[in-house]
Amino acid sequence: MSVLELQQVSKVYGAGPAEVHALRDASLTVEAGAMVAVMGPSGSGKSTLLTIAGSLEKPTSGEVLIEGAPLSAMSRGAQARLRRRTIGYVFQDFNLLPGLTAAENVALPLELDGVPARKARAAGIRALEGLGLAARASSFPDQLSGGERQRVAIARAVAGERHLLLADEPSGALDSANGEAVMQLIRDACTRGVAAVLVTHDAQLASWADRVLLVRDGQVTDRGAQAGPQARLAMEQGR
Image 1: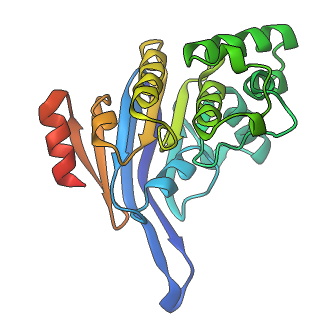
Image 2: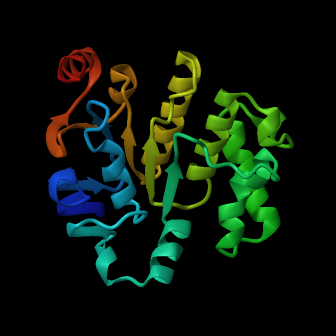
């Protein structure tokens, strides 16, 4: 089943001489259980693709469908519910609430969607355990290192029953060992049927993906299936 579909999506900022085409007729389909990596130079449109895919930004033209439902036909309230229930996000700046502990940050989206507090906290603890952070569950964000905050943000994105995971440089603040652990957690989520789209500059981490997209000047090229050392070499050459 298709979880995410972009149909000829374009995004234009500004007008006249200041006009910038962040995306140009981008099309993409991500099936349940698939992981897609997005690579390309800075400013190529990778992050714009993610924010539009997650309904955080509207395209100038084209359509986005989540599990077959077009975002353009949804009210703002319906889109907000979709983001809470269906989509998990990992942002570059973490977006953790400073007044909540790590476990509370992970559990909060579940509670906002009506999951009982005890059940939400248990799901949060399980996600933190999967990233080696069980001992930090009661710590506040300012008591955590950058890498720990990144892992808390990832735990929040994968906790619960979300069907789509969107991650912008999910290993950006991590060393290689923790970066691999993060990719394993995302891969485990995909094994459960989650569709994942992640932006990364790291060809080694991108080799975990089933497919690789290259974005240049707002245009998306699907490199197709990738696997193993040959995929890593191909991705390095395409950066």
